[in-house]
Image 1 (tube, rainbow, N blue to C red):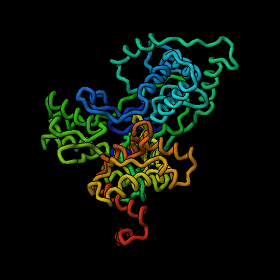
Image 2: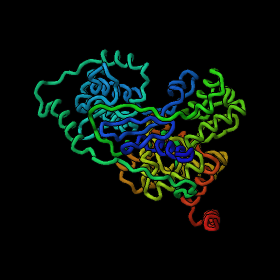
Image 3: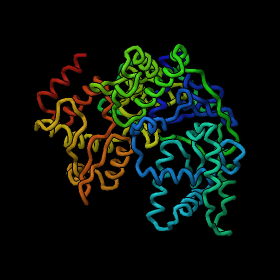
Image 4: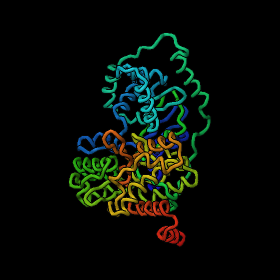
Length: 482
């Protein structure tokens, strides 16, 4: 696999989350392979030099926000308590556990039993599933592949956390016992496990410049940022973590320990920060030579540096975004790039990242319609009235929910679902105004648009807001002339 193919693979995994690999298929450089007993596996990126996104706290840089982060962390702790039954082995993959046992553990942890608590916990489980921290299927939950990234040094702290979590009070006799649910999950996993390769290797469409229409790949970081651990089965049994090929050693090997740490810190910050960061705070952003090396590191993952005056952030490389867009347009998606699986802040068109860093795939029609309405009312109209700078995609002018309901034919439930998806992906932000909800504005993923992506988005907004205007005619004429 050459560097171009590896970059596309990283972009696809960033958009779709960990994706199944066929038996014997190797992970791309910079990824680990989580191998199952049947020799299939999952590939997901690793952080350089073992540095985790918690580094952002050390530098006082705000990460991409997670909705209801406190509940989400507590629910993940409850899942760990229920699934990590043998503390003498690594947490991943653990054992399957009934969802009801997890909910009871969470209830015991927070000391509340009301329906609101239960709804919060179920919402947190969905967010964790979407971001591949857990895998849910038919009333059973299992630790997701991202838990395999917990460093060994953290296992002692996790063990102490599990010991301190309270045991839930559950009746001895239930309609279906916990042990029976777990046994059924194990049996179902064995019977559904394929006998042949899970995914065949296919060459990515390298060099293709096709980009799918009005799709946005801004990040949510949508790291987003919006990824679903698609097709995941709750499988029990042993698994092993296999390290992949080194990715940055040739680039960082010539630096001393201090410079190398500065390079890795800048890499993590531009990849995971919610806003562009000031170059004066990081040597690898101030120094042109170091910044060039940082750009090469990002390029190996299909990313590029984006400058906002004296601030920097990362986004998808336009060529890689075009290739990923072509894969989506061809209906190949994650399976095309070697069974690997793009989207976080400012990425290729049409993918959305989950709240903790996993993606859902291309945006649906409802999400696109709602996002377009918010861009029209929060950006296009204020810009036409001279209230916004011409090049800004962020706006202090929220679009009220009543305005969205008035201008869309979506049912209320579908509208709320679309808003939730876009909010979790970082494509929309919610603004409060006193006791009432102020409305929605474009989210932080729009920081991650390259100049070419911003231009395409501008053209798509022109076509959406005024398809019969002279500007729209000029856009269509220019495109047809290419």
